[in-house]
Length: 378
Ligand code: HEC
Ligand code: HEC
Image (cartoon, rainbow, N blue to C red; front, side, top):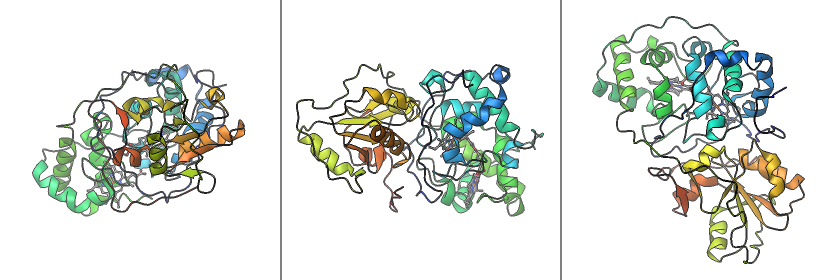
């Protein structure tokens, strides 16, 4: 079983708590180049599709739901919606899983990017996801659209859920370059015309004129222009020093609920040169975009490696969603006997936004500030 899954996928459930999680801030620009991962639709034969449900349950269900219905956490969309499956391609699904959607909590799962899945395992997931709904249909063509007119309509009908090019809101971020590289105009139009039944995405074919829909598609497509290509930092070598300020004093955090330490307290402790370990719990590709200075990459899907973390040092773990993946790492550390393992409350996005030091690939900007900032503690 699972022989093509690279690291051991033990203890993997992400703590993602509920669909009521507040909207996540996105990056100021979704700007990474596509990963060098070749889609191999026929590699599904190499990993039995019967293995896919177990992979899905361990890596994906806590966000996308046990039945692929979506919205278990982080506003992850449905993967089984009929209007999605009938219009998507294997390539779209494969690339979404392999490369993720930088700036959202959808990480990159490809082994080539440091993730836990090789091409064959991703292909088996793709085949299995596709088997949950209708087969592909021929999509209606898209006529010439006027992006200027589309911009107005987008502001009126779409922005409250999909955000603008710089800011992700609750629904799939349409300005994400990795989304735009995979989504054809016909796929986008199909989603607008038919909606996604059972979700907040209405069938706009019933309220908008065909020309207006083509205009909106032209506007969405225009997000692609001006997207700055982004570099990744080198992959973690595993030889990075684990302990920050090894000669410093223990910070002695008084964690809320014995679990959460606010970013401001951690920053203050670092300024006093106190001793700690900071763990980045996200997939390693996210560490390669941006991480807190001194943070080491111990992803939620490779918890076995936590054995290397010395027991006598205060440890903090963070992710981008406030606590879903970091909570898993903290629970695993506690099981290993750590008495001072905490979640860095608010995660890296707040840290970055406050201007505290990070190591970032060229082009990575702090996430935008949120006016309606809220937290949801599991
Ligand atoms: C921590 C939460 C989380 C986990 C775990 C996760 N996803 Fe996602 N996924 C998301 C979010 C959020 C999005 C939407 C991102 C955006 O804004 O574009 C997404 C998007 C996707 C998409 C694109 C869907 C679309 O309509 O464009 C696919 C396909 C997908 N995920 C598959 C998977 C698979 C398969 C796994 C497991 C290997 C997985 N995801 C794990 C949160 C997650
Ligand atoms: C009330 C919120 C809301 C509004 C308004 C809205 N959408 Fe959506 N949209 C969503 C949600 C939620 C989804 C994902 C549904 C799912 O889980 O399958 C979605 C999905 C989509 C998708 C498919 C993305 C993918 O990867 O599967 C496209 C394209 C899209 N919307 C475009 C638009 C456009 C263009 C407008 C304006 C005409 C619009 N939406 C208005 C909430 C909304």
